[in-house]
Length: 483
Image (tube, rainbow, N blue to C red; front, top):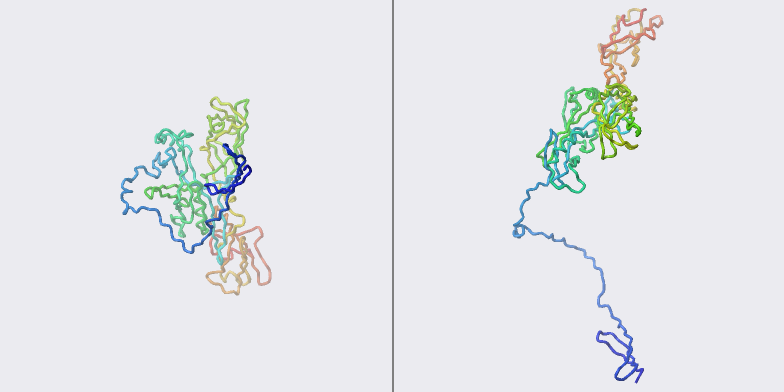
């Protein structure tokens, strides 16, 4: 009958309630399906294994599987840079990026401070030796790589023929990059105790071809004197050296000179200012000496640049001094620079100077004042001896007193036995005088005083100083004030 409800199970395993709405030829029904609850057939668990076996590598031993390796052959293309030399300078072409060439520095040189004033990045400190009258000298210095931009520009023209076409997008020619090597070694000429030269490796110095190296040396005073002389002397081997770089698995060794000369350093020596005058198509420029030594400008060339794209030669005129011009520290040279060819100037236009005609007149005294550390021991004690003969006392003198101008006072007593060695004492000498060779004759000054047996005291006038050059001062009647 209509409205009857039946419970059925479908072919897919679900249950349904079916209600008959109308019997007859066209049976009408409606139903609701129910999914039966399914009990889980699996449980998720975690197990920890105490022992894990090593993984077996996925390899094919050539001896067991020769057919896999039978078609593999060697390559004829080297994976290392290709060496070439132009005008005595080495270049290494990248094996993958053939337009890239690696270069080495022309040399390593002492360097000036990047901040103005541009004093040498070199320091000197004197260290007293325990239980000794001598001193040691600690020298700290930086050396930077020097690269001549003109030789790279010239080399690019010859190397361009080695670049395969077409070039990568954005590349217009040779691209230079500094060579990187991790086995650079420094060799340095240092003084031996006997004054001769010892050329030795410095394995403790880390040399980086792109940024240079920093070194520290501790030397006896005499050895440092020789080095300080050498850095102001051309064509010397002392405190000069070289950096050796082994390349291409040891098949090739590059040698880069280390030049330690105070008149030839890396870094700025002139600060410049400029004012662009667009109305007159010129740039008013000033070069100022911002180092410790005089500078001699023998010749001066310049280019004018608008950004990194346009550069033209500059014409220099209206100099404030005739060339060659000497600039002492703090002095300036003013002039005007105009483009040699058609060029529109703007406030951002720059002057690029060629300073190859500029010479530093290294002043050893001025440089010394900038590199010596203020906390250093500034004096040096030199041994001298004072002696006399018994006859010098005669029958009236009881005491002879010698007052050293830069030292102690030594008293000679009539009744005190004298020895051939005399009485040891010291003369204090400024280290600066020794280093700058201002005192090299061994002289010292003194005054004499005598005490007579009647109690009277007779001495040299305060303004009168006697002089002696030998290490032993023999006091005779001629060295004493008149009695």
